[in-house]
Image: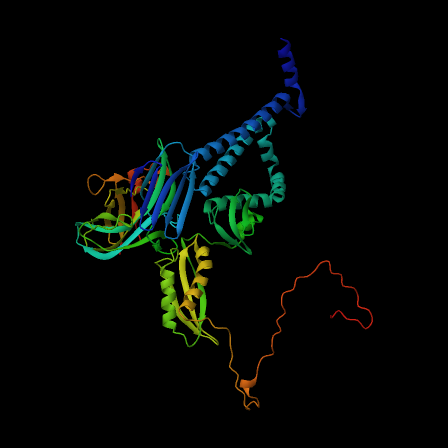
Length: 310
Length: 237
């Protein structure tokens, strides 16, 4: 009896306009319920599909589910907030215009985010280049995309900017090509060098058999005969190969007597030099032996007429 | 070398040495092959060691799901079925097991891995590449280095087709072994002059062979057989 009376009393207390205590309690419960359901759904999705779906797909499904539950929660809240949508429609024009101006960036990001999610020019884990930024996509959210640069820096890019920027996805295709230019001396056998390089590339697991590598003399340069080496590799492993292969080429060539020359230039004089070049010697290099420094040794300022020399 | 053993195990074959030894409460595993070595510490009171060939798609890293075998081209008449034998590279997996739980602790191989691209550079797939001689009778390669694929090529088209490669997917790659042979039984149905469907068949090529533990089966859900067909749509030659 008393409980009912108390409940009735609190039910009828109006806090904000028509919103009563019961409404507030309902709102809190719905919000809490929404968060709990989101947590449960995300955990369930992770447990059920964590090892069966690629991480990017799983994150996409989880994000979509989360926003769907947010939407349902908001729709459930509206009656308790006594939010009259018809009123909004009546006042529509001005309010909508004001809202549109106020939220144009937010809406722009939101819509861009949705387009990015469905068009999917990038996925989580892709190596991308966006304008001057290069890194790995960490997350694609509804308003922004998170990229971690190769230096480990966190960068948040608004989706509207992402959508209008030139995005280069470095791993969208299964294979990519890289190239080196290797210079050899003019007296070296270019055909032999090409054969050695091709043979070396053939022994590298990540250098693709097909499309095959291209190795050819590209230029007769000032100081060297330039051989261009173009190699296809799996997109996810090309960097490993690129960083390892060049030194191996250098070692392999030198092992077979083919040198990579320094830049050099021959000078011809109109007049004969009046010097016997055989007698010209470079100045001797004085070798100074390593000496232990004595930290305790105190060297004072020399007095007049004194030096530090013994 | 392949088989099931206890923890007291030491195998030496050429430059390969595999040893399990008890060290107090733990078991130490060590493997040497050429320049590569692997050591593991296993906390186990009792279990089994299983050494068997696994899908050759793990070294030096998991790069792809596809094995591509190129061979001397064969021209097949319309409507015909021809059986050929090819070789494939062997990777050997060392597993430890307790009850129904398996764990792969090491994979090694004597074969030099090489990768390729099947299809165009934008939509193709990376494949583990292997060149094989074409045999019409069952060859006998060293079971520690190479296995045998018994491939039935079915030409369902109304024209002649020239075939010089087959691409097999890892899921559903059934490998069988005995003391002398490691094998896969596969089928390739050529449905257009440039398109074929390939699948592995759950059957040994001779009696008494034991089925290998499927590495890619243990890592994922069981798929239906129909989902394990790969469509070679970038040519068969």
